[in-house]
Image 1: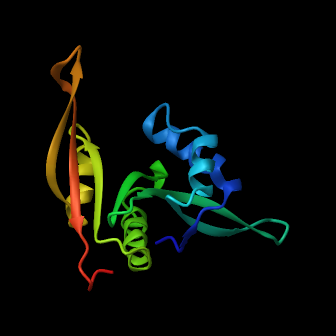
Image 2: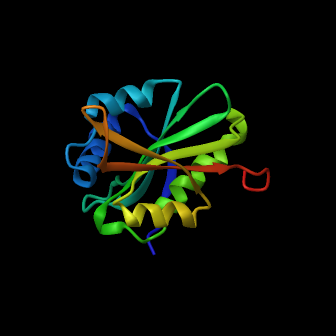
Length: 165
């Protein structure tokens, strides 16, 4: 089991987040976009890091995963992106990152958390269901105004209970 801690990201860490994002999602989000989110009041970027000892006696930290959320004024917080380094998936890091969103939610008066997930990503669908999210809506992309089955997304929703916060 890896020992790590979760904290808010700093702008200088946007490159590391972007690198993992690209490895998970192909094109991924740019370093600049992630840095802007870190600096913005409407977004929250939490990261999981592990401290490692260097050969010279110093320590460095290694990014294991991240969660990016967007807060809106009606008490909802949307999980825009969550990612865990491919070699570390299944270790509970993603669950801890989502829990970090719930832990911070009372201070932001958040009552509902939502996220979108492609219907082809069975691992992500299973993950969010295990976290207590329920599918509440299906979005279909369109090709020239005609609904398409190529890009189907589920919207998941979780109403936060006081005991969970």
